[in-house]
Length: 276
Image (cartoon, rainbow, N blue to C red; front, side):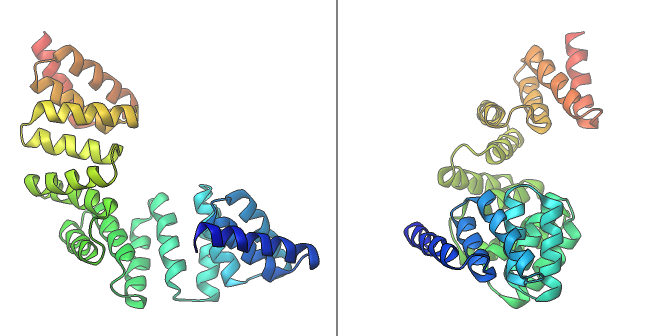
């Protein structure tokens, strides 16, 4: 629904609510429109009212679950989406939204199960495939992840999310040049993304392009300060560029944020050795 249509729908639903208050259909529809308009708190209020008037409605629960996800109320979102799935099983919207929640809760295996179901219900859906590719990446099923992301890229070319995730998978598989191609494209489509910058910085490091790596990691640190991985990687790059004091500063910060990371300690130990 377009923004103008959503605004018009909201005006009509506001009038309907005045003429016939406490109507569950009006409230759940208005909650859905507010969700589309990103008025999440107002959407939640309407959906809560609708749930009191008409409990256990799959549409209300499914929509409210998505709203709670946007408000970062992940446990509440999962509870609503689980109920919606019981009331109306095998709904692709419910499954995809529950995947988002489970990803935030790091329940990757459960997310994968939902995505497999969603793919059966709605085959060749680019969103399902790129999400499944991302989940498989988190589960270290890299070849399966690459396969799903390749399919997503065919169905929906030039999607920044697909490209940056696939770039990371190729990095892990040590396909550095191909990873760099994906990350370069992702950066054109969605500039100044911390994940893209951090991942591309690591790829450039592996390709021994240290100045380019440092530039990307500096950007990543500005966009997302105090990230232990960014600091660790930048510390390693500075070590390769003989900036040992700068490297030590980054590695000390990384060790405070993520205590006793083996790689951080190993690199820092080498830097301290050089600095005597």
